[in-house]
Image (tube, rainbow, N blue to C red; front, side):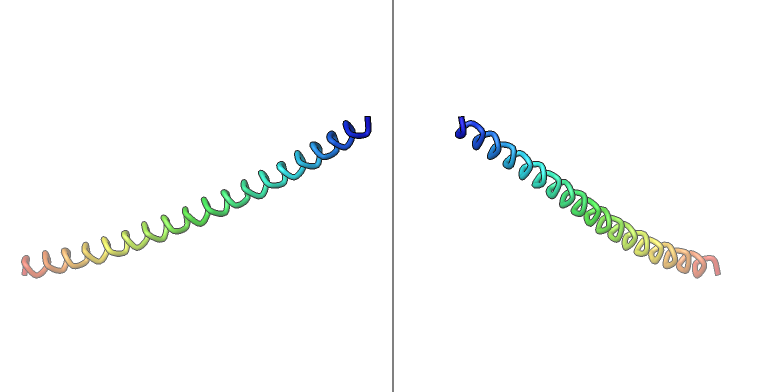
Length: 67
């Protein structure tokens, strides 16, 4: 009978450990997604700044042609 209780306790401990590991992996995934979103936002901002510069160049060229 003792063997059955030991197995039950071991199984319960393993289950608790697995739940803790799942929680840890969920936190890691959330951090990764947040970091990835930040990187994508920075890339988008860089692209916007680049396009603003091109627009300014085109506006200047257009004004020079109109003179």
